[in-house]
Length: 363
Image (tube, rainbow, N blue to C red; front, side, top):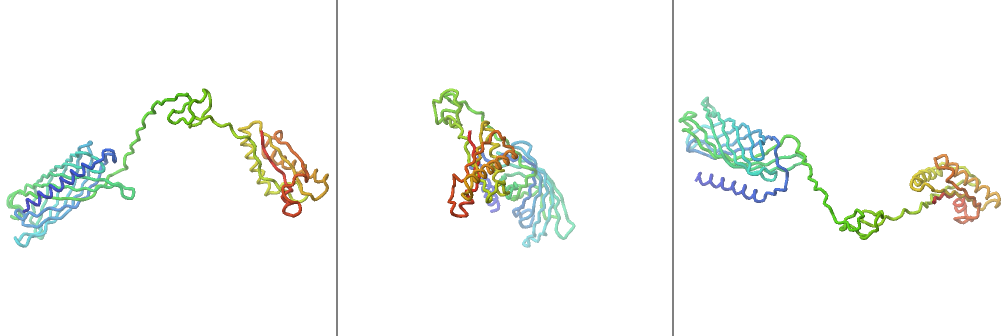
């Protein structure tokens, strides 16, 4: 019966490895080659014929390092507890040991890395509640796999393997509780913790391939929306002639004045600051840019007085722009008095809108 169970477990592990390998994607994660720590729970199947104890539970802690794409080494220590079997009067047993493993990976892929392992080591066994103890060398061999994943930004691995362990105990070891060399099946599952940062793999950039360009405008025919462009014509990314820049005409926000005043209020100065900045930018594209400043009034007062007031308002705006860096030679001033209202002069609100200066650019 025990032989059947062992064979079933081995076959199950082999089938898991085979299925996992069949689903392996060679274009998946990069090969895991970092050193690592492995922590595993172990279960040693019952072997009453030789030990007189029940199945054992324990753990294995090891450190490992890849030597190449296929080979790796591990050095670890293990601990097991074997409860006693009342039916044969055996005592509980505890063992400590260490071993060196050689691992051969069939494919070292982060999604699924099946391996064959073989180890040499030694064990120290002691009967609980007595001073009886023994030590012996051991070997083991078996199959396993590792599967890596990311959790909260950290790389981890799940691991499982199944080994057959053979310990070279002498006859009547542990006071007769072990009768000679001992063969056991050991199953283990646990975690793998890679050490260090994941290596950065540079993307492979394919060299640009030559493409057909019938009209010689620098845009491939497959992306050219305007084929047949005349030679020497400047084109955009779609192969179409670039549009001429829009006219440098821009009207800025009106500057308003208090009744019978031509000085610039602080709130209106903010508008002129913005206009001066924009004009400076436009002059870099349009060196011949001109700035027209026109002054206006409401209808309160005589025509002659309002004409002079509108002229003073235009000159006040010009002076402010010059102080902000606009060349005086670019600026033309105009005075229209009350002749060009933009709102009714019948209301206070309308008259306030008419007391203004307008700033506009053009080539």
